[in-house]
Image (cartoon, rainbow, N blue to C red; front, side, top):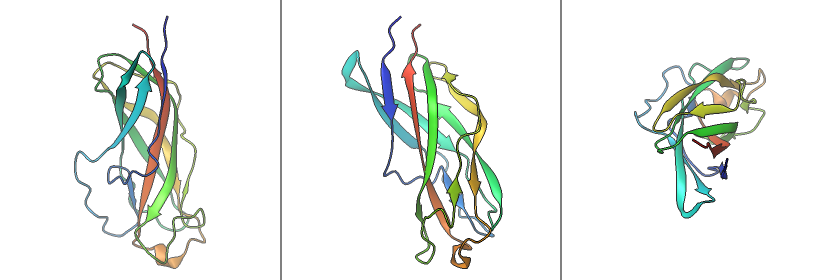
Length: 160
């Protein structure tokens, strides 16, 4: 059994697909916006592996609120993949007076069971979620701000 390990990360991605909206009337999110994560297959060094993580936008955050962001993994490849780890961080805020800090918005650890298998050319909504928390003492300037959450995953190609 040969397993090629890969790691996928996207530190600089701006995602409407996993945008956390903190506003009475959240901004619209275009269908199809998603994070594309790229890894390398050890057997095919010139052929990167691609999979997509899609986060359902979180709406209605206010100081003290905890909301759950659901994640879907899309595998366009012709073989199964196993997602081993999933992480998320707050990347940016749309409001100058509301920096993307833990004092204004926190992202907790993924709550579901991993590893998760995604079929060849399949799509899987993960059973858990990523808790998004706006602390009680968040800046008042954060009201109406949009936050970008960067999601990354680690896993490997599964043998047939």
